[in-house]
Image 1 (spheres, rainbow, N blue to C red):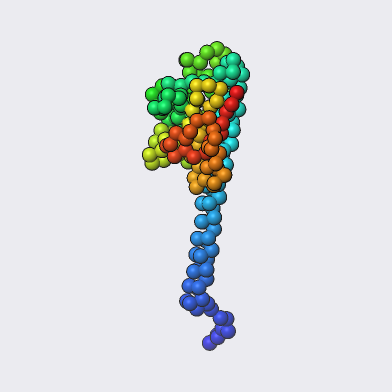
Image 2 (cartoon, rainbow, N blue to C red):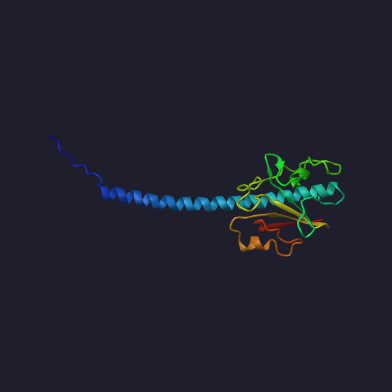
Amino acid sequence: MFESNAKAFTIIELLVVIAVISVLAAIVLANINQYAEKSRNTRRKVDLVNIKKALMMYAIDHNNTLPASGFGWSDGGQGWATNNNAGAPCYGGGDLEDFLDGTDANIPDPKNFYVKMPHDPKCGGCGGCGSNPGGYMYYHSGSSCAVVFAGLENPTAADLSSCTGVCVGLPGYGMNYCIEIKL
């Protein structure tokens, strides 16, 4: 009869290897989620910079006037929710997207295309995230100042301080990051 001197793994050794692989996989998955969150926050910040640039181009074409809106808040300023649902506005009339892509009927000439409106990478659309609308918001103070807002996931202290001292306050709705637009 043939006898083999080959050693086999014991069940304990196999279980230890499986446990080590499981722990390593859990660590990697936690880091992937953290990096995905940071990536979405970076995209939100870049989106607001692009919206600001589009608003500045709009103002140049319209005698240093920022777009106004019918979506008002109780303190009298004009604001928009800039998210949409398959091309239709979420909140009744036009929104910032309609102004910046040139499709709103109330835009004074010239009706130019300024930007394809970006949408929140996680919560875009009318459903949003929970009680928050999930898009970007725009608030025009009625003067030569406006602010665009985004809701960051787990914002840093520096992110939260971006809304300190701007010409209009936070609208709520989970918005916690601001970029001010001054003409």
